[in-house]
Length: 165
Image (cartoon, rainbow, N blue to C red; front, side, top):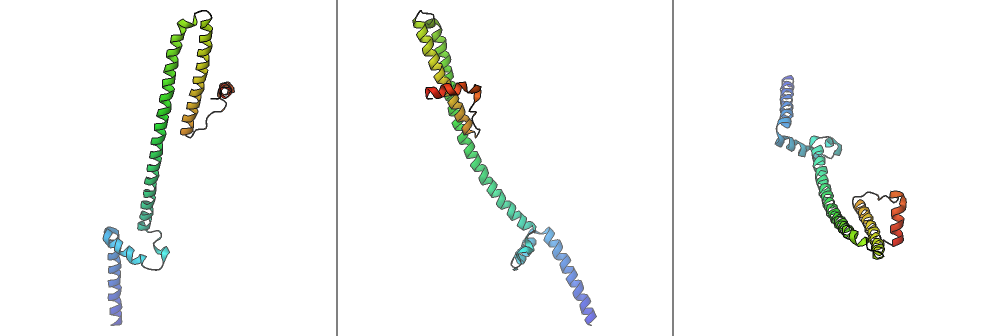
């Protein structure tokens, strides 16, 4: 009688364990039920490597990454706006310089007056070149690139620093 009871209990236990394993792999609701039941136990390391724990960690990490992406996109939009503004200033200045240089050509041929026009035009060109260098350095700073402090052998920068630009 005891042997018979043991045999029946073993068979019932084996079938129920086999069934619960199959259900936990094929049925998400049953898996979640078992997960909640095991998580109620005071052994925290029991479920540390479970798929649910890994999934929860991935979801949390994904949420953080999405926040980081939003922050980066907002910063990128701000940088793009600033770079476009500076680029527009440089373009406007360059077009103005080209128009002024073209207009100076006939006046530069006038005796005595032409010398003053050449000197004034050159001084204005130097000032606008310094402004362009300053704007380019601002673009580089906006993009997080260290501006080159010694480009063109330092000559252009020493001229701009002497002028106070």
